[in-house]
Image 1 (cartoon, rainbow, N blue to C red):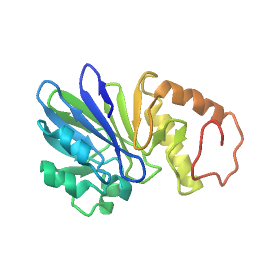
Image 2: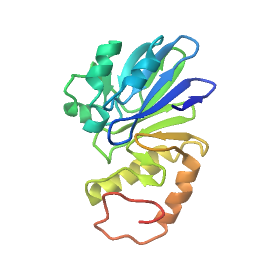
Image 3: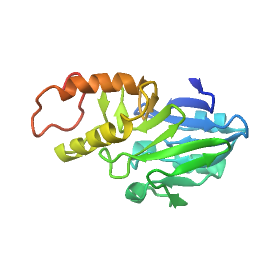
Amino acid sequence: MPLFYSKEARIFKTSCGPFDNNSYLVVCPSTGESIIIDAPMGPGEIIEEAKGTHVKAILITHGHQDHLAGLGEIIDATGAPVRVHRDDAKALTISPETMIEDGENIIVGTLEIAAIHTPGHTPGSLCYLVGKHLFSGDTLFPGGPGRSRSPEALLQIIESITDRLYDLADDTFILPGHGGNTTIGVSKEQYSVFQGKEHPKDLSGDVLWLES
């Protein structure tokens, strides 16, 4: 499965479970300390890749079960604590060790992982920024935002994206909770098309910047 390298980190990406869920291992090359982002069903590859590293934490992007089904298996294999935003903590069957606050810097070896609260898909949705790699969960995908349950939630997720994520550099690499990758610059260009069109007041659900 894909490996990504930046000057700060080694990143392993794997897809698992019936919903094409992505799980990520982010490793500090200087110390061997690591974190796992999301815990979908069938996490065997991410567990195998994590061997030989010291997993400091399992960071959850949001509290939907397709991102949590493998959590117990990962905890059993690594002994690592799980962390999540307080607004999604009730979705976990395993109590998180500590809650993640918006703007918190999570230190893993020499890495700094910035937590960005991006509500909309769920109240406690988080994105994680490592250098110029953004782990966007189900907040932002290639082509549009994550699924919204109501028009109000769509407005909230768009605000999270435009106010919190589109301030990042255009070459920031987006690694989402499902599927392939994109960049902030490409996403902003596509959003400008969406922004320039009229939309029904009840728009929500699966929205695409170029087609909705």
